[in-house]
Amino acid sequence: MPHISQAAQALPPSGIRKFFDLVASTEGVISLGVGEPDFFTPWALREAAIYSIEKGRTTYTSNYGLLELRERIAGHIFDHYQVEYDPAEEILATVGVSEGMDLAMRVILNPGDEVLVPQPCYVSYEPCVFMAGGVPVGIPTSPAEQFLPTLAQLEGALSRRTKAILLGYPSNPTGAIMPRKRIEEIVAFAQKHDLYLISDEIYDRLTYDGTHTCVSSVPGAKERTILLNGFSKAYAMTGWRLGYACAPRDVLAAMVKIHSYTIISAPIMAQRAGIEALKSGEPAVREMFDHYNRRRRLIVAGLSDIGLECHLPQGAFYAFPEIEVTGLTSEEFAEKLLFEEKVAVVPGTAFGMGGEGHVRCSYATSIDKIETALVRMRRFVDKYRDARTSHSTLARTVAGAAR
Ligand SMILES: Cc1ncc(COP(=O)(O)O)c(C=O)c1O
Figure 1 (cartoon, rainbow, N blue to C red):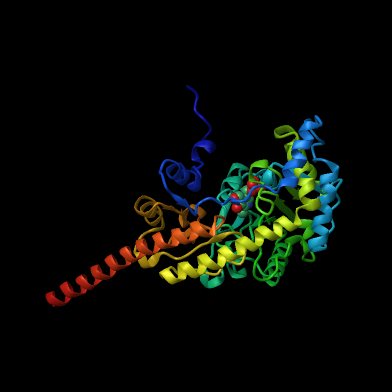
Figure 2 (tube, rainbow, N blue to C red):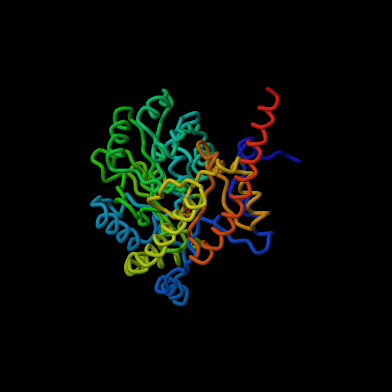
């Protein structure tokens, strides 16, 4: 039997998937695990796709995607961020941000090129760099720095081989957003060292505090930025597999080449739904936003009340509390919480450096479920904190008696 490639063997399985296989086989679980809206795709969007099928519009499209979709994407980006992208040559409809990220890495990296990746971060970033022959260089971030990389850290991680910086804000899993000033500094840094910027802005519309700055809107950024976004989160369209990449012409042309061989085109029905999303989806986006925002306040207050300190997530739909009071590692916490209280959260270690000592709790679920999960988590945390306190009291007594 021949062997699968060394690269495929070396790739670790996703820390999230592994955990979810476990959740699926346990009954009565409240899941704060999945990073997926709990809303249906708005009806008008579903109808647009149904209509497409009814009318027999079930073919491949241009490799770039339907021109109408690209025009609407260009309009959407301009309306929100005043950045101009040419729908003819600077926008590609992708199979989610997932494909966009893979393409981005494949077109910019030569073997051994390094990509600076602030962490904790979305689980696909490092594997995409790695699969493209690159070397991910993790930059650990912490709550003390609002989970943002500092310029000093970027300087320190720079080498002759550094080719790009990968940014993902609002962040999965920390909920951090990157203020405009920090983006400006990073853009200046990228200019100085001639680096690409890859920006995954899939949660841009879920920014609760402050405003989202699109990386390519910062002067000097657009010509070195590959901007990735998609419909999965804001429009509750995870299963449709639709996203887009915006990049300078030459970069985009290279991405289209690979896309045309591996994908051909994003599914036409999804593209039709995407057009409708950009035409009429705004009220639904706002409505879902309001729900997430209410849930965010509830979960952050609840976790803090339990004694799990939580940096206020300003975007996306995740809380990333510290769990050190329990004396458990993040894997132990997640596993024991699942088995003992039937609440699923994701261990922070699934998201790379800086993840230990945290778990990710998604609040893309109903208020009722969040409330019940918080009751169960309180019981769980109290138990381990009390055990820890009595253990250390006992240890002090024993040590005192021995003196
Ligand atoms: C930060 C981030 N980027 C990308 C993705 C994947 O997006 P898509 O469904 O568009 O492939 C996710 C999904 O959870 C995500 O959280």
